[in-house]
Length: 306
Image 1: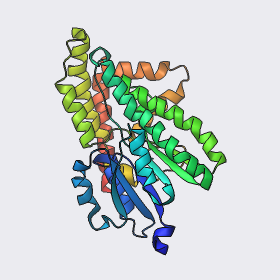
Image 2: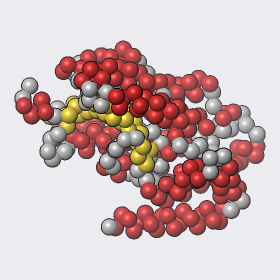
Image 3: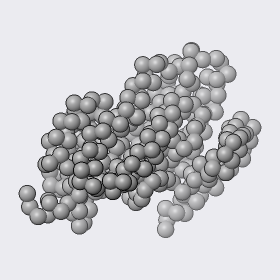
């Protein structure tokens, strides 16, 4: 091992076949000072093409692609054990799945599968790398959470619940981790325009709504889905924008334009203010909602020109 390899920070990133994981891995690998050795992982290596293209000349130099299934303890152990001295300086937990739609239309099997990836996948990974980080008295655990880990959103019941679990787990763990000089960071993006999101909404538009009542189905199709598209077009970030953010402990929201929405929760500990605000925006004052998105869209465009 050369002196350059020895001083580099080894970063293990999960869920790198597309989206935020791919952007984070490629950005770190292309660091001009070559401070990072990136182990970019994914469950299905046949989907490595986009990452290889994004990595360019860094492939097999500062970026290495490995198989890792966050739902398998054996897969995680095999991946970590393949690294020199099992050393992981920074864990970036990004692997996840999405789910939107009326609760009555979701199967318990699909709900459990989502939690197995979004929450238990994180727990498995941290259990594997934490003891070594403690022994070295150093490390950084970076978790891609969501603003929906702070505040629930209509028709995102299950996904939001998994992110609330992630937030509680990390906030509790962070106290212990500090004793061992280990940093913990929750990255909380708002809307991000990725292949991940596109597939989730594509499935939502064709999902079977026969399991719910007509009024709920109508709200989902005629209100929620159109509103979501407007929110993404007005507030959506690119994966690269999320990857470029700095990650200080403990929480970091990547989208400043979305912050007023999450601030409502902290403004009223009873929860009444955010509930009523979201209810009125969606069901009673849609013109105000649309106008607000128009203003935010204008601010987003201006910010992009700077």
